[in-house]
Length: 205
Image: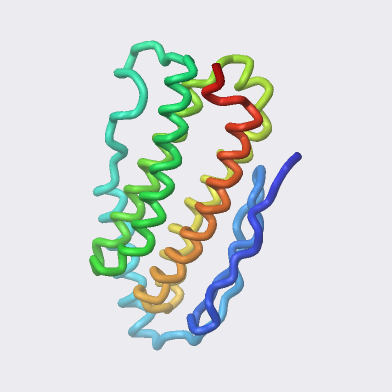
């Protein structure tokens, strides 16, 4: 059964709001735009600032190795290995949500922090899949594909942030909106991840 990310609506007091509407398979995220345009000068300055922040974030973000066995070694699919990998993903989602809540305190460096934590979450999830048995991978192929698609849609929020800044929205407002969407969307993704783990009997003896 395919599933979708429920609609996310930002608080009414946020002047330039967005709504992440659909989540599943190859569907993308669509957003409702509202707010006022900036002046041409502000548009150009904000666009350059957004691109600079994006470039810095991409250069800064690297997924640290630390999930699963050393490169080139076999990945165990024992119950304990699966349980550890599952808990790591859950912890990384929590860390990611914490980053979205605190990153604005770090000014221009906040984007890179959120992006790096998202990359770390992706790495943990990929390491988790490597611990699954062939039978689990086969029976859960569709559900795992939806989880992959969900992470892809979360990633689109970063691109949409850059586009918003280029369109004239203030970087602070666009960043706050992005973080709110990511916080809610990652929570929905975690719920589905936990459900899939139960269906596949991850970590069961």
